[in-house]
Each structure stands twice: as C-alpha cells, then as structure tokens.
Length: 210
Image (tube, rainbow, N blue to C red):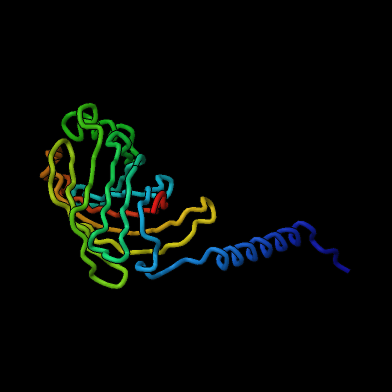
C-alpha cells in the first residue's frame, strides 16, 4: 500500500484552512459595491496601495512606462452630494521610476522635472460629475514645475468597507487621464518621444474622521 505524502497533505490542509479563513474574512468584512453606501468623511491615501503609472510613446516603437513611488493625499467623500467630494494628491517628483537609473536621473534634472527646485507635483480637484453608477469625471488642476493646468480624470469606484488589516473604513478607486508634457515645460526629446502622457491611477483611502 502506497504511503501518503505527508508534505503534500500538509500543504493541502493549509490551503484549505487559508481558503476557509479568506471566505470567513469576506463574510466578516464585506465589500460594498455601491459608492453611495460608503461611509462619508475625510480619508487619507494609503501610499502602500496607491499607484501612479504613466506611459509615453518611445520613438514610435513602443509605449514606455514608468511610475512614481512616493505618493500622499486625501479624499473628502460626500455620499449625500457626491459632486461636493474633493481629492488632493501630492507626488514626490524625485521618486520617478522608469526601471532605468540613468533615465531617472535625466528626468530629475533641470531640463525636465527639476526636482531640486520643484520637489512636489500636485493634483487638486475642483469639480466632480457622476457619469455612471460607479464612475465619475474629476476635474482639477495639475501643477508641475510651478505650472498649473487643468486635468480631467475618469475615475471608477472599485469598492468600500472595513479593511481587515487596518480596521479603517476604506474606499478604492481606479482612474485614467492624459495630458501633454510640453504644457509643463517637459519638452526634452520631443518629437522623438511622445508629447501625450497617459496616466493609470489606482488608490485606496482609509477614513480618518467623519
């Protein structure tokens, strides 16, 4: 008679237990899919669960992607009057990361982001319009190198509920937007490297006060 594989059996039991814990956690910490049923209040961005990814055309051959690694921000969520909700985001310009050390340094230099003199990039919303049950158009001002220009972001609500890791009421959103980098004096390598910057945004916010 073939002996049981103790290691495989242990892994299967562990997987089942973890699966059961995950299922129990989902029951204890349900995710709300209706944005208007989220808890209103002041929320703080969770920087460990936030991403700002950008893409630009590279010589007509590909889209080159990068990201910023240091992000902070806040959300004022008004579920009774969603149009009154506001979001503010701060990005450390020097945290730019293209997976290329030499390129990152060139992007930090004076000809591009000039991070020594303009260390912070900001976005501050001034208008929110619902365009669907889970989607909204967020209009705001993007400021880079002291230049302030309007930027529109299409945001989609992902979910809300109590985060089992923090105990905080949490809301999550995905977003996308686009702008011309030349509008902000980021015109190095034009026209070989594209002018239009496409943004992909992911963010979780934890509630800090009502």
